Structure formats: C-alpha cells, structure tokens
Amino acid sequence: MLALPPAPAPAPRRQLFVGTSLAAAAGAMLVGGMLAMWLRFRNEAIAATGHWVPEKISIPEVPSNIMLLGFVGICVFAQWAVYAARRDDKQHVGVALGLTALLGLAYINAQVAVYVQMELPINDATGSAYGIMFYAVTGTMMALIIAGMVFSFVAAFRYLGGRSNDREIVTAHAIYWYFIAVAFSMLWFVVYVTK
Image 1: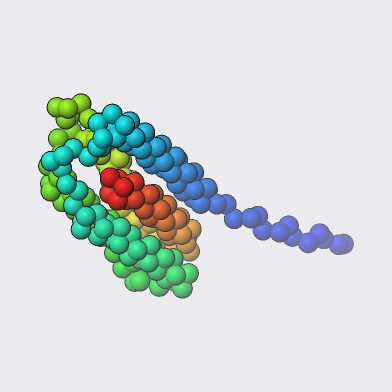
Image 2: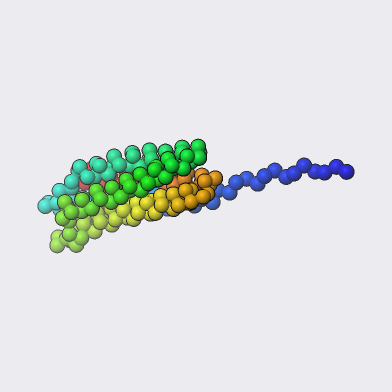
C-alpha cells in the first residue's frame, strides 16, 4: 500500500510582527498628526504675533540633543539583542534588553530636565498654544518611550524566562524601537530645532 507524503509544515505565524507593525503605524500617525498640528499652530502664531516661542522661554539644546543621540544607542542595543537571540546567547540578550530600557529611562530623565529648565507654564496668559502643544507632543513621546520600556521588560521576561526559541519577540522589540527613533527624530527637528 502506498502512502501520501506528509503535508508541509505550516508557515510560521507572525502575529507579533503584524501587531508591532500596526502599533508602529498607529504611533506614526499619532506623532505625525500631532506634529502637523504643531506646525499649523506655529504658522498661525507667527502670522499673528511674529513669534511662536514665548519670549521668556529658551529651549535647552543640550538635553534635547542628548535625547536624539541616545536613540543611536537604543537602536544599537535593540539590534544587539536580535543578534544575540539568533545565536542563543541569553546573557547578551539580557544585557542588550536591559541597556535598551536603561537608555529609555535616560530619555525620560533628559525630557524632565528640559521641562525643569524651560519653566514653561501649560496655560499661557497671552493665550498662546505653545505650552499646551509642547507638553502634549513631548508627553505623547514620553508615553511611547514608557511603552517601549515595558516592551523591553516583557521581551526579557519571555525570552530569558524559558522561551528562548521565541526570537520573534526580540525582533519585534527592535522594530518598535526603530519606529520610536524615527518618530523622535521628526519631533526633535520640528519642536527643538525649528522652534
């Protein structure tokens, strides 16, 4: 009696990649929309009063530039985690994920330093939307960073906790941080450079 050959193995499911990509697309639309509103309010304020940033406010450039440079390290460490996961090197995966989360915390520290140095009131007496928009845009980015830090801890917990054959979460983690790096680069240019 002849038997049929076994069926091919089903294609691996990629729900985590799809979910991370959808989250990155939604986040890109969120940040892009907020930056578009920022530019609209900026253009209206410049047309009406001749300036957008309140006169007594100076934007500290050192912490904002450090935040941008920190994303280089975040992307390197996130990719290092992927590289180590492909080689089943749990120690390096743990170190890379931990350093990624640590640099996310450093971003939050630098953003708080910007808030403290600027001493910007949320509601300006002149009716300018600068304070509200500044805190809305940078606060949204901070929320995305906190979500990335939680993603780092979840990826470390899942990968180091015994699912070392599940490399997909480490790769999805890197994709999320790449999205955050691009989104912050846009925010940095619009909010901190063009002022």
